[in-house]
Image (cartoon, rainbow, N blue to C red):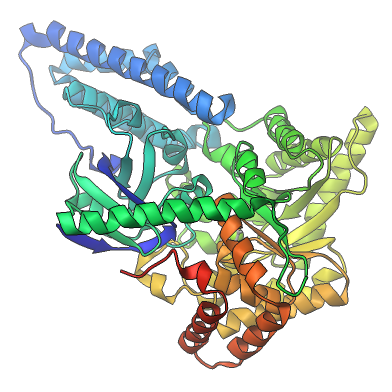
Length: 587
Ligand code: PEP
Ligand code: MG
């Protein structure tokens, strides 16, 4: 038995089997020669592996289309197309025959050369395919090796735990949700994309284990405790019994929490708190509604880009947004314009990778530098607004000029739609994420111009504390309950009140009952969280009064030390709403 600790990012416990996702970088193939008479057989071996890979991709495509819709599944069509493309296949065959090398070497060399060319290409459509070419090489190599391919559709177990060094958003989106039950990665922090997707799916996840993917073996027995950040390989009988009990406790707690879904989210002294959902894909809306959410406070539209190989068209955007509006049936939808960059954009795809991507060309900056892409999205959002209550918000706004410029382009697109006689909501609300300390400090100025604020604590914490949110090595320094962060939240909340504009909070910590109590204490009445977090949050809210929250916030903000502040909040919450913490027994 081996116990490894990491960062807990998505609650729950799973007892399952390891499913290792190999690191593409490790797929280096030595050059091996073959004899001339063996060349035809070697080409036949390549053909056999190629056909097996296509069969597998067809299956993956069908599953993904069922699970996530046609758009998200398109990624596999590109892979299938590539395995039928003579401009890729002929050079591999020619190399086997001409240079008398193994099919493994020829495939990896040709695809690596192509990936390098794509990476250097000035057109971003080519750059965005680099990772896919690497994926193709790894799939082909495993088939050539006659090994079982590491795809989830092949897993016999239905208790599959994905173990990887890191996962790309497209990998995470490609998993069979009927089989995958948990995630563990070596890299990552509390709010990296694996964490966001795992919690959206309600699956336990631990990130930042640093070494697990090097130690774990395929098929090995594994326990993932996503509430405490513990991963156990080959558990002994006693540990297994302990966790079987925990699984049952969590299951029962989830059922009883789910019963809260229809109850109102009001504090014990009668103040209404609006609970909304955060989504990455339109399909998640059903989960949000099922868990009692009253609309969508954050739609992370960049996932439209991350799960496909071509740039989404205006129609692609529009169809996704329209689908959301239809599913919401009159409830509000807050669409955030794309937040590409930082951890949501593979630097490998870029011609000049940034040295500090979190401080680089991301979010609204990226949009204003890529106006075609921005305008396309704005038009689609406007068109969707004709069908139901839609709000639009810009991410990572730092300077007022960015907000004004973003709004200027929105207005221009309104005029274009007018000219074409296309309907949209003329009074569409335009807001901004508050996730940069500079913007938080200037909240009064922004409040005069925006229709609403949404606090993005994931980034606000990272930029205030100078802690990379995806870096496991500094994860212990990443804490939202820090007096400096609380002071910024307090000031932003006051500005919103003074200017009478709505404010909500949509960072991951808004779903943490301790931080949520502070947000309420600091005047925030709308929280937007992942679907699976809504019931627990509702339970906490129903057990607290606004006065409790205000007192706790006042005291927490007065500490000099973040550890003392966090310790104080933890103690108070455990006394006031012990039932919320009952299902998270410490090991
Ligand atoms: C945030 O920063 O808090 C946020 C909600 O945005 P994202 O996690 O997508 O950066
Ligand atoms: Mg953010």
